[in-house]
Image (spheres, rainbow, N blue to C red):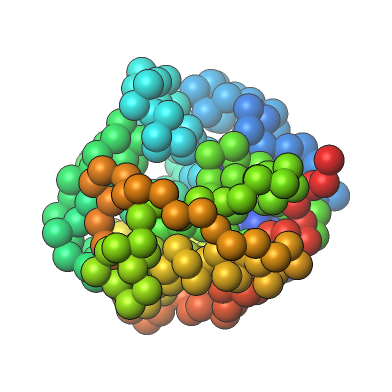
Length: 319
């Protein structure tokens, strides 16, 4: 009995794999290495290199490794770029999820924890986002994640699939010095690259209706995220009830200026950020209510903002 982690060689997936191993759960990594790194796969954990679109390889992997559940993290995760690459985004995130679910049905695997996203909400009409907040995705990426949730819902009706979707906001930090966020589009790597190159990071607007005038967003530590993935898998394994979806958020949020202050302290690089104009459409504040996940999935903010910055900086490759 084991759990297959699709995208298990990526930033988030690799943390989930290590948390499964730490919890005594057998894990199998399935990844095409398009953005993941094979060095992120722990020694002794089986690794299958393959595309999420390859249904036959998925069927073989599920059967060969006696898989009883899947944590589905694989996908194309760049919301901004998805606007320029909608067909690729839908192929990876919608067709890929469909083929995974088909492979699971063919092999009798009936439990899945789905990596969804706060992008399903778009720009929500409320400052505190709950699971019932209206869904209005603003990118092909967000739309593809919402369709993924619908696929799980409909497969549950058709074949009794047991499932839950975890919607997370801005995932940062590192749970180990040899795991890092390699995305070319995420905030922390972008700031680290700027500081390493001697450039000064920019704040886009400082006249928002927030305590310090800069946007407030929700940032969560990747290691905390991994704990809740494993808790969800264990609930499904035990046949315990789960919600269809959970927000993984802080309930409080931090401002962009607070992030920049933590960046200076956590990296040891003293700088004063430049202030640029607002970006069109940026809301003042978006923060998630994580109380349902706290009730069911051992969700809690175990790390401070400084922890997030310091751990990410320590793990980030130099040069």
